[in-house]
Image (cartoon, rainbow, N blue to C red; front, side):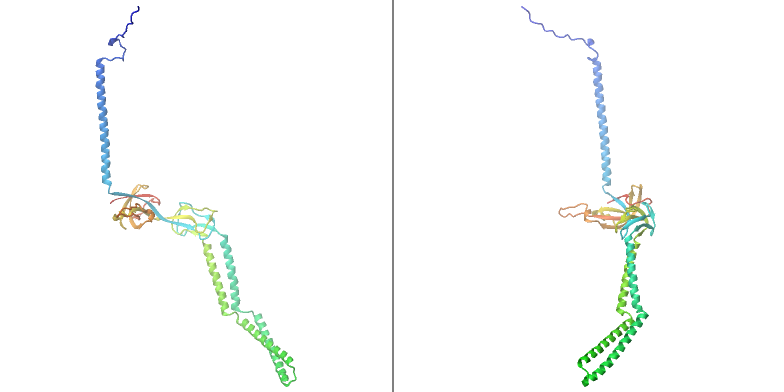
Length: 365
């Protein structure tokens, strides 16, 4: 009979028989615990210091914000007078005498436009005027010497004819009354006599017309036609002047829209001039800010592009369109706030100031 198996327990080794790292002496364990407590306390101190720093920065910003609550900052833009140079007539741009950035004087020649239609119209109108003037000259001078002599002879012949037919008529009348001449023959003589008188009247009228010339009304009508043609010629010549464009103001060429060889439409800009001597700044502010703003006030602004402050004088305050409403309120006893446009000019010339630059205006309310 076999006996029951024995349970074998592992033997516990002394501390000196264990491998290094598997067991630590009591002194080492105590030192490690002390270091961990020291590191933990040091980390907590760093966090406290950082928290205090953030809190100080926050409080400083709050103080600065509280100081600036009564200040308003508005951004504006520099603006200037811009003039578009365009022609009243269509044509092809033949010469462009300036470039972008060029400075021009008032009256300086800028572009030339070629328009064959205007030249053809001028020739047509001039020919019509010449024709009417010739007719007017003939009407004033009357007929030529040869024409006057011819109508005079025609009138004399008509008078002789009337004299002959009258004598024949008187003789035949006596014979008819005595019964010696038939009535039918007498009627024929009487008819010839009457025709001769009518022919003499026509000759006299023609003679008077040739000798007196055209009537006053006819001359006045021809004179009116001449004036009408001259007015049309003046109109065409005014269009002819539009083929050459000159600078309407002294300024700088800011943009060229069309170039040589391109077609210029009626009224379409060819180039744009900017008056650099007349600059101002445009701001848009709410109407509830106008209590502290008046026309004629002098303000100080900052121009970031030039890194300098400039003094401006307000010269215009005007309401902007309905589209520029800043805030709409529908509550009881409330109203919409409109935007107002404020324009101000520099009190002195500002070097290098150009349209489009940003201007910052800060003022306390």
